[in-house]
Image 1 (cartoon, helix red, strand yellow):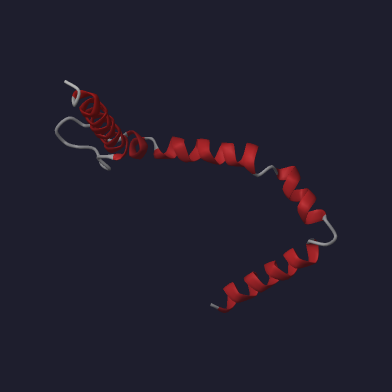
Image 2 (image 1 turned 135 degrees about the vertical axis):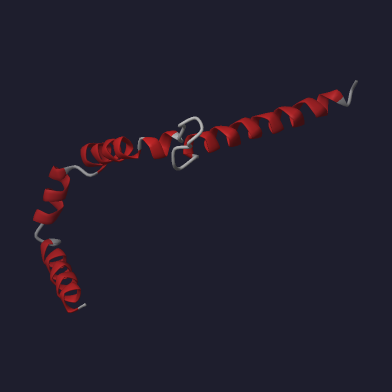
Length: 95
């Protein structure tokens, strides 16, 4: 009976690991619709909606247009950005 104290957390951890593993598999797989039941993972099925929402969050919260304009407009940074832009454009035209 005293050994059950050690046995219960191990079993609980295994059950938790198994349910998490199964949940991740069900979200991402199958990549394509199956012909039998017509099911598909949530991420592949809604990838366009997910991409749109992620881009909205990034553009509205993480990378704000005003902050970029402020950084680029800074007199110290503008020549560095311009030189890098010209270098990148020049190198891409060569290749």
